[in-house]
Image 1 (cartoon, rainbow, N blue to C red):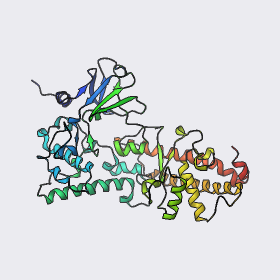
Image 2 (cartoon, rainbow, N blue to C red):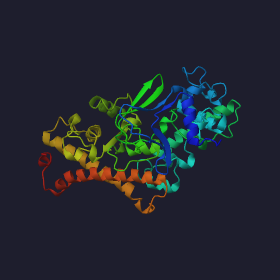
Image 3 (cartoon, rainbow, N blue to C red):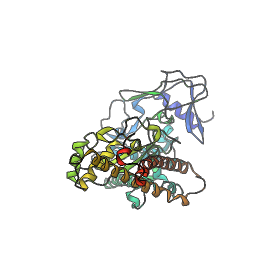
Image 4 (cartoon, rainbow, N blue to C red):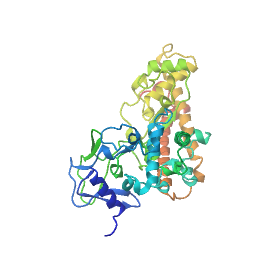
Length: 431
């Protein structure tokens, strides 16, 4: 009898251990989609379950705790990773990664071998943490690899540093316990997710696909909410995401992604100003002290403009501010007023409008500077991206430029007539 193929071996293992796959679907592989599922024998109707993965098949740090939840495979006695649980500096996601690496090294002796052997190897992974120089060049100047920022301080560098720090903490802990770690390296792992649901993660993501996720005691059901015709790929939907999130988390990007956005950051804010922002914009500035995550705002693409989007917090309802988060506009307004020791209540309405013109002008200068920081590297880009990672990075880069150009165009449409003296400040606010 001929040996089973990797796909057949995974399918058999999945079914024998409580997993369920809709009988109408079959796994295929292509250079474009990798491993994926297709409705082969018939169409799949709405409400049908296409896959169910039991909690017992998941792979995470729960497998190495001494008393895991009911049904979870207990590997605490055999796994060296159980020695990491008592170290508060090592997060559960890192333990899951180390456990996956350990199981991969076990080869066919691992319970999860049929699943692990289909996971992408290092050369197949297309997230920026694994990029080579010829792929990283497409990120130069963007938020992920920004200019005038030490490599370790960029978004890619910070994430890489965080993973490496966690990895080295885990390795050090194992060495202290007398465990040989010669075969455990950062290159041994394939995923950064704290919990893996075998087979379910094979379904590719597609924006707009209507699916329903159902969880019951850890079991994960994937159900369709729309018909899939025979011969068509069956997709999952991991919720709307911008290309920066998709690239960093999954290694791909969507051309003309309607949910794409550009992250902009404010510098650290002094405590007194932070309290003022909390008082005036409590839905955004929630922490007691300044936190980096709250200083990040997202510019939106034209496809996401919403009527009245910029009219919150007293922000003028101007078309040039449609792509600017109102929380960012109002924060800048308060910061600049404080810096100039002005009060919006001490001046007439015309004076407040003048202040807003200053904010819009400052936004325009910053957006132009950000765009220039990306475009200055265009001469170094290869004529064509040669790898999947490079292609994804170029899509990300193109989307960032497009959003910035749209925002700049609208800001300039407002500012240019004012600068030329064609309209008055009062008239410029009459839209």
